[in-house]
Length: 282
Ligand code: PXL
Image 1 (cartoon, protein in one colour):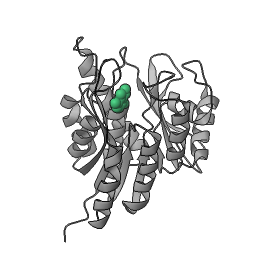
Image 2: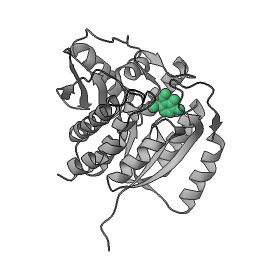
Image 3: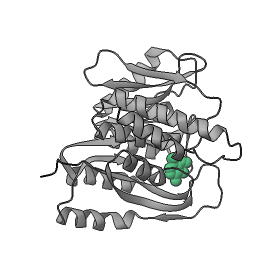
Image 4: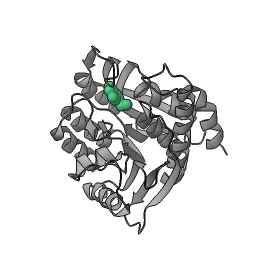
């Protein structure tokens, strides 16, 4: 019999144009050689970060029927990765998916995907952030940025000038929500440097991967990072190795985007995919 090939389910919206959420997760995880099933939480004409007048079709009512069908077909997943979710009800449905569609030793990865740079994305409020905290509480791995971690744990958001005690407190509070491992993005202690921090329950110290901070930030990098992280993790890498791979891939995408000054709405990750696959198979 063929070796058990791992299967990932990712639950997030389809922003038809905008290089984020499912249009990023599906190609990236697939490029890692992993079968990727999708559960779209909503269909938008574009993402909400910089466009105006987008359409939004909520698919919450379709989710229970899809899950019932998969369960009847005995379909289960080795990893379930959730990103942008549109409502508190969807968060409850994802918790149900975690219970019903997880294969033995399934890894549940939650990217809270709701805020950045100290601000919630359009349409979210504090109550949603607290609900998202409960979803991170049932995750094996939570992947917040500093804004999301602060909002979920009622800590102040500090854009800069913090030290390790602030980061440690943030990460410890995310673990206290119930997550087994927290991977915190956007950490910087020095000008020109940016990185990702990893802390699991029982660890005595935070592990880091730092890289150069590029002058431009791009939309969708959180989703690109999370997708490549899931690809690495499901391929057998440790959380720190997967975070390192994902950060390098994201950086490569930003570099490609910086060359095109007209490309404001997303990150040109596509031509970086060969690099991801090469690094993954090293
Ligand atoms: O990249 C996160 C994201 C996902 N989906 C939608 C968004 C955003 C961020 O703005 O608007 C619809």
